[in-house]
Length: 216
Image (cartoon, rainbow, N blue to C red; front, side, top):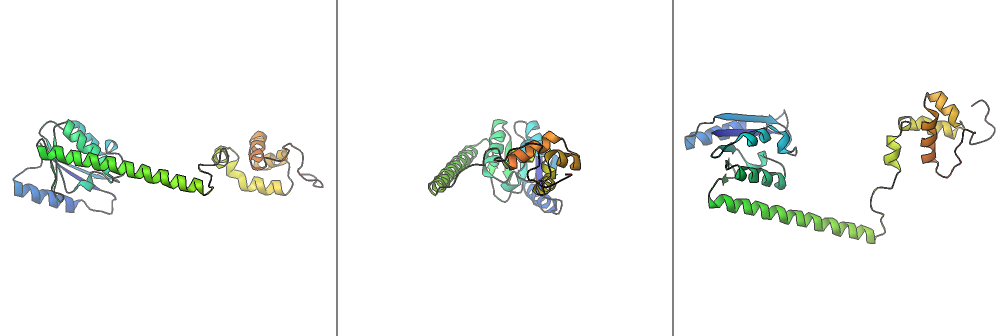
């Protein structure tokens, strides 16, 4: 069976250009498309979660998938390479019109797959090398790498975090933890834990942080 695969990234784009390219190609080759697969989704999404993944799972030996170009399959080399490997494993063929690729059972398909695999490995190694060099340079410059332990990430998970501006304002005005929790309708322990994070050197209690403030 012959399948025509069309993908656009947004609903503002049209599938008609790709459909026209595939239809014209099939007319020249005297091929009839048995099924069309169209989807509007980013190429960065994994192919397994797209209609393309469903198509690959149902293909049989000798089936042909035709698309306008390789970039319709995915936005990065690793994903495209994985899709090509799936096609080879299932003995189905993948043809692209603009690129002129014919992934099938011949030696050219094996060479093409090897070339993609080699390119992917080289790209991975280069990315890894650049990352190591950049981290080493920053470390030599005295920069502390990584996220500070247990500060903002933990603050964001606290129940009182959404009221942080009100809590910090009231705390600055001299309100006690009890008074803040009562005024904002929060659990006193939640307020206490939050203040313990933003005032790590302070003595946290229900007492007023400053003297002379009555009735708060």
